[in-house]
Length: 373
Image 1: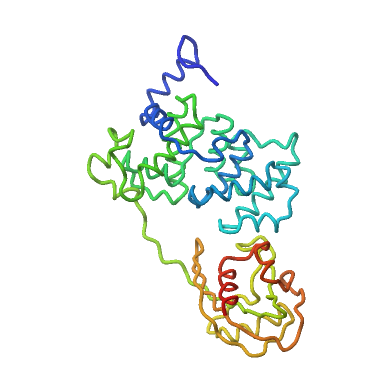
Image 2: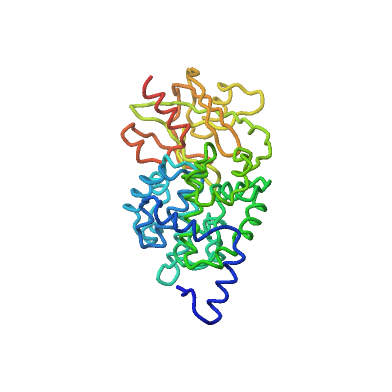
């Protein structure tokens, strides 16, 4: 770690950087050291643990992540443990966090890292960003926290803090404004000895004080220089460009039970729900009824010919870019035992075994509905 002060080039460079910093970063660091929350990964010495936590924290709140992190680290305490695990087991452990692409990418990246000398993570943000599932934000967080690289993190919390602080009119859901903000923040990182703490301080300030609604400006260490606070415009920032409502997609799922077991199929590939188990069915065609879709899709996928079919209910489930309406049907089978066909394995699963399988969330809700019927 660099030493501040004294003669020489290092002291002069830090002094020059401090003069260029756009916010009172030392005041923010002092606040953070008093108010930082206890989190399981903050007390963990392993860059691997920080990596796992940062992947889990993508689009998921801290309090939700904590128990999942503890369970995950107990099962996969090192990158080699994770690399050697079966993907299905990793996905099952991930259930409840959603965004399963994160788990698949984490597993794939673990195999990459485990094959390196000493199974060591890359030490720079640029190299980390080349790993599957590690973008600019996650790479900057790991590199600064674990390896003291002077690179700022810009997540939603940080963007909100500085959109208000500097009254920035950008929509920070887009990448170009985030990258521009990172450049604005860089002088503060050039001036600090604690880039990891500074990144965590900015994120913590957004999470605890500069909240989306009802920000606690009286508790904010940056309040004296906050442009939005001075004008009473906190609610106006950050700006959000109106977006069209997400499209609605319709699919059918069929509850088929035989001998106390449910018929499930596994979705293959690297898509949104790749590797997860679900009820047989699939996407409905334009103008197609749920029953017609079921009679078309289930035999082709499983070899099971449906008998009587009854519509049970609809389940709505929101994804990041569309809303799924899942039409759940209950049916009997008149022929076929369930066989692997195009698209992956088929399995009859007892209720007691469902918890061990990674099942898509909407389909797990459908199974709960079927179990109560």
